Amino acid sequence: MPNLPFPSKRAPIYQDVPDDKWYNWRWQLSNRINTPEEFEKVIPLTEGERKALSAAHLFRVDITPYFISLIDPEDPNDPIRKQVVPTAEELVPFTAMMEDSLAEDRHSPVPGLVHRYPDRVLMLVTTQCASYCRYCTRSRIVGDPSATFSRSEFDMQIEYLKRTPQVRDVLLSGGDPLVLAPRILEEILSRLREIPHIEIIRIGSRVPVFLPMRVTDELTDMLQKYHPLWMNIHVNHPNEITAELAEACDRLTRAGIPLGNQSVLLAGVNDNVHVQRQLVHDLVRIRVRPYYLYQCDLVEGAGHFRTPIAKGIEIMEGLRGHTSGYAVPTYVVDAPGGGGKIPVLPQYLISMSDHKVVLRNFEGFITTYEEPIHYDPDKAAKPQIRRPEPGQTGVFGLLEGESMFIKPEGFDELHDRGGIQHRLKDEHKWVPLGIGDGSRISVEGDDAPPAGNAPQTPSDAG
Ligand code: SF4
Image (cartoon, protein in one colour):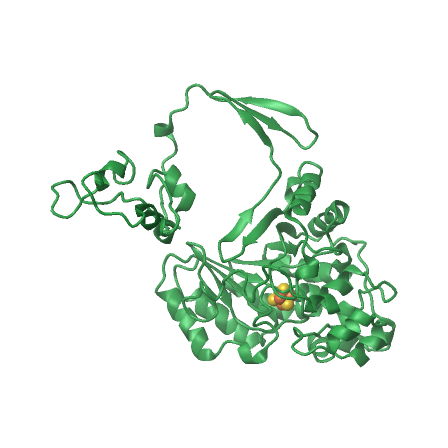
């Protein structure tokens, strides 16, 4: 690995810890900081931090000696400190906060398996992490050992996957899968690999960031038996990029695991274009592709981290075109209520006519794209495989001509206004010709061809 200019730090209190302990991930886990007394030995606490640490029902606190060493003890606004040291602000409720803002548990056919999208699932395999982020989306279960998933729930997850062939991609998360005992992690991977329709496995982990010493050769040797395996790490600020993280990422990429980064837009931590530029530049230097920048979720404890969505758009404006496309993440709002990730970006399309599109670039250069006169959609490439997306074709389904509209649930009932079924109300009138299977809808006792193009509602159109 080339010599990269990333620091390696140890707080003064750890200077005398022998290397064989410091670089041992088990030592790091057993020496995590969580009491006010322990904190005070590393960083002088502010009043708000002391208040939070004495609060009842505080989301779990634990910080590895490695990660707390990255904090500047003199700076109460240190961007790493804000992510992991609780403050009184996280005790303040805010409008719209929820316990499970992404409705993950509602989209779980069995405990711990979130099936939100057509072809992939999120599989929660533990509630434990190496350190705990104060804005954690899953704080409702994360950090609580009693909430962790049992063997019978794990078996239910596997059985669901076996009987659901539309799932081709499984994302292991939690909690953090890389804090699991190696034997248990390998069992999960091998059981998944026994399912023929699971094409790829992904791991979402902040262990390389909180505990890079966990990424041993032994771990990567085990992981690479289960390819194709992808991994997303979670870095929010350039100060988290150290020599140790660079080495952990080097090990993972040499084991053939492509790395991406998911970061969360956090007020006072990374809500600045120049911080974000440095972050994405440093990430690509350690061969990690910036993948998502998340808008902070509406989750309890995270109110003081939230920014307006406009801040995210400003950041994307300052990245796209200003740096390599490879370094630009997709900015997303994870839809409250469980709609999944919705990309949000500045407006680049200025106007259009029947033959011309007007676009602008990052510099404000305005150009036109002349549309082709002879484009024949009937001659478009033909797919070899068309994956079914039962009930979830959504807006794409409208473009494909599966249906002509998507109606909110209860739309027809509302517009019936409690009226009567009368002679002018004939279902045939509202079935568009050539949409869906192209046939007219059938009503009971009718001779018309069978139904197939009834308008969809969100419950069946997705
Ligand atoms: S590492 Fe992930 S799951 Fe664990 S506390 Fe942080 S955000 Fe939550």
